[in-house]
Length: 336
Ligand code: IPM
Ligand code: MN
Image 1 (cartoon, rainbow, N blue to C red):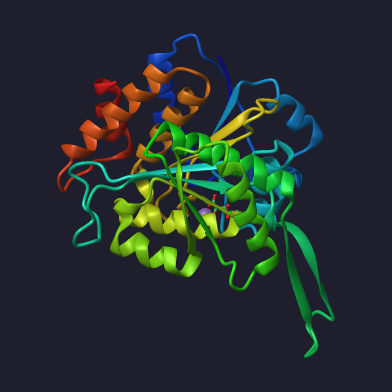
Image 2: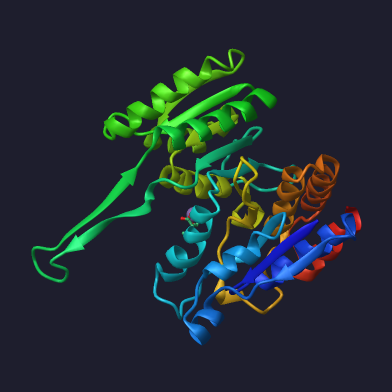
């Protein structure tokens, strides 16, 4: 197993260290290559993600990323120049974001019920493509456009992936969009769900506008099994999903090229949290759960289940005191 490690900025290196300990316990044969992408390298060399970097990353079975982002770099540079470029060039079209409310974890909801759903967020299209521009910048007549790009091919592949996941779990798929306003893309999403759904007659489908979906995410999150949605709606709804399941410290994600041509990338949903970086304070659980997603993707279903069970048992026993980054790592490592 060859894994590319991108510890990145802020708390990234600390949480990746703990995730790697868990991975190595289950797979002592793992070979890792560390890449120094992020703010430090950008300041030193001006480089974000070169062709040579891409080629080197492609030599691996999967990528484990901590976090990228630093206040010393203007907003958008690392996001577009590194993270989104990587997701796009690797064709990570399935952005997989599971949400589980583990026993013993406090939800901000009064009556959360049983929360166990997965958001399949489209990862390579929508408003994220950078298809837009600005005219007359800085003048009173400035115009800015951000064009959402939606292709039948791109929608169909992610919808089919979401149906397959629904088929393998609760057999319910909810399309989240805004087809009362975004009628062109919304219609294509809805028609694609109807058509692909014929291949999955056991899966019940349902539709929610994104605004209504945020209400149900708070009032009745137990209703969801698999959600499929556009890149931007998926970004927003998965932060809300993380919040209702105990916070961003527990939310893991996978950026998957379901064709297997490119290595898929696994990362916590949280960012680099520069305010607490280097202090052994960050919760490494999301990074460790990202290892579970990585293992399942590479076919080690047992290993993935062991990591998830270890996390479930650790969070159940945490109470008020989670402990430091390394303490959480030690405990989960002992339970795996
Ligand atoms: C995420 C992040 C990224 C996104 C940013 C950092 C570009 O918010 O992974 O959810 O919007 O996809
Ligand atoms: Mn986000």
